[in-house]
Length: 266
Image (cartoon, rainbow, N blue to C red):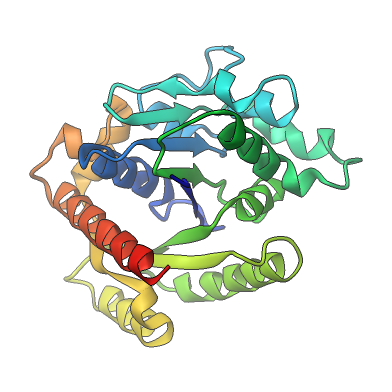
């Protein structure tokens, strides 16, 4: 089985990127899929959101794979959730851009590490999710080069679509020169407030422009969603009946249906 490698990306912070990685991964794990999350953000929010420390001084993290001192198989760690593993991150990762400045092939480091891992290990991961940093930095380019497809969380607020236009340009540049297979799998509308006219306006514009790329599920503004990470667990476990959880369960279902359609078309 070939693992699908999916980057969750937006160069803007605070749009629900890490929340989407954690909860979509947990939803799929609950549906008996084997999932690996790679935290590629030096802030390490996916790491702490899945119950690990981003300050523990352990060498089992993505930085030590990208700098060549560890293999991927040595840094994968279990989470409290069945079927869900993680490669953690910490602030050391922010030095990678400077450290690899003389390496012309540095955009391919993550791709090559993952390729070697999948070649050498019989793994049953159905999906690998990469949580990208909120910037169009080297780390983001590495993720784009390593991925088959992308999920873009889009905050339903003013200026969101302008940021998306810039992101699409970056994706097109990477497609042209570094990874011709890359495509946007879906756009997920986040922080949706149905009382707010702006939310429905941004939704309409996104659906008009990106058509069926925009998931039917929208993720609402929800207090429980923002509380769950401080407990180191997905909202799907923290409070499975809250509106945020219901939305991520719906997104999981939509994502699995999308998988079926893609597989039957292949």
